[in-house]
Amino acid sequence: MAFVLLFGLTACSQAQQKSPSRAKSSLEDQQEKLEAHKALAADFIKAMGNSEVEKLKTMITDDFSWWIIGKPEYLATAGEHDTQYFLEFFKGEELFPEGTNFKPTSMIAEGNSVAVEAEFKAKTAMGSNYENYYHFLFIVEDGKIKRMKEYMDTYHAKVTFGL
Image (cartoon, rainbow, N blue to C red; front, side, top):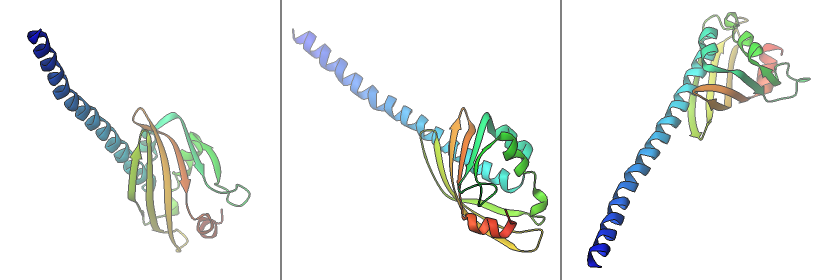
C-alpha cells in the first residue's frame, strides 16, 4: 500500500512539473502569434503609405473587405469596399508626390484581431498638408489581413481631397 501511495504521489508530482512547461510553451506560442499579427499590421500600414499595391495583394485574403467610417452621401469613400476597390485606391501614389509618413503609434492584439492607432502626414500634389490620425481594426486569418475597419477624421479627408 505504501508503494501505491508513493507511486501515486510521484506520478502527480511529475505531472504537475510538466504541466507548467506545457502551458508556458502554449503561452509563448500564442504570444508569438500575436506579435506576428502586429508585425503584419505594421507592414500593411507601411505598404499602404508607400502605395505598394503588389505587396498589398500578397498580404490580404481572397475575400478581403475594407470598411471606412462615415456616411457615403457625406464622404465618397465611406462604407463597405471589396478587394478591387481597395487595391485601386492605393494605386494613387501621384496624390502624394513627395511620399508619405504613415506609421503606427500604438498597437494591441488579441486572438485574431489587431487594433492600431496610426498617424499620416504628407504634402498633397495640390500643395496642401494632409495630417490625419487613424484607428484600424485588422482581422487576421492564416497570416493575412481578412478585414480592415478604418476610423479617422472624415471631415479633414473631405475638405482636403473633396471626397
